[in-house]
Amino acid sequence: MLARVLPLVLLLASNVFMTFAWYGHLKYRSSPLLLAIVASWGIAFFEYSLMVPANRLGSTVYSVVQLKTIQEILTLVVFAGFSTWYLGQPLKWNHYAAFALIVGAAFLMFYEPGGAASPTPTL
Image (cartoon, rainbow, N blue to C red; front, side):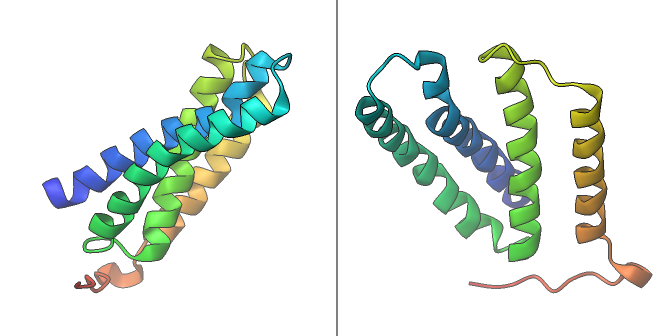
């Protein structure tokens, strides 16, 4: 159970850092661009410090394609909250509809026709 959940927790946390690194500076547009870049690099260090172990651990129970799909879904969830809460730009119905389509795509990524389980990679 922990082998399946820990990578998800690490991916979620890394996405919080990633979102702040990529978009957090937009709240401070008057700050110098160079300062925004350096601050973003600093934040991204923590993102990578969580993302790399998440992928390393996660690859023992998920395929790489599944890991990437999980990461993208988490990115959207984190970004939706960040956009509304931090940047004050609430999402509209069409954004939610687009996210729902992406979640549908994620379902297809994990769907195994005939119930066949995908092989579990080993290290």
